[in-house]
Length: 291
Image (cartoon, rainbow, N blue to C red; front, side):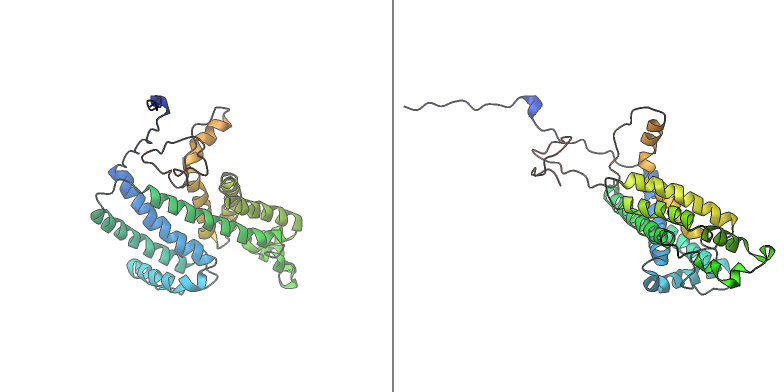
């Protein structure tokens, strides 16, 4: 004799509920993001990476937009040198050439992709690219100070024996930095540690804050001591500020002793949704709905 038992129904509260669908972006947000990707993403490659590890590869591309910038401004084209990272005419020319190109790309992109609701996935990719580029730049320039080598040439007799009134403001700054290895090492360690913190998804906020502090100092010194690397230092600062943009409200709340709100995803891949996929606070690593 067999008996049958009725299936046990799960309470309604235990049933997985799909995550709410994000609201589509407005037209202004879509156009603004396309311009951000076109202009900022292009300069991230051309200027930041083009001044660091990819300089030999990107030099012909910089030359192309430099000639375009010279044509549009009616100026004489200036050849881009391998050490040009700011203030030279060639830097202004290829920045302007790419800015005009980015505007054209934004217009064409907006006409061809009018049905798009958002670009969250592309925004995450741009965020990741900016984080890695900033980390590499901070580590690269931080090592030059943490291992005292960037300002050592000021100890050569050619510079050390100059009358103070004949020293340029840049060489005055270089002499000031090179006069104390300890100060140079500390400033370099701030940049180096900030870059290393940016490499981790757990510590990137501290790294971005450190980058803002150190790059603000560098931009001020480069500006008022006329050091010809203002463009790159300013771009590093802009990247750090832009990366923290979703976090600024929570950071201000913490400063004033208020509880922080939900943390934005900051470029993290979205969680999977679908039948049987809930949105738990801490998804199990074995769950098919977690990444």
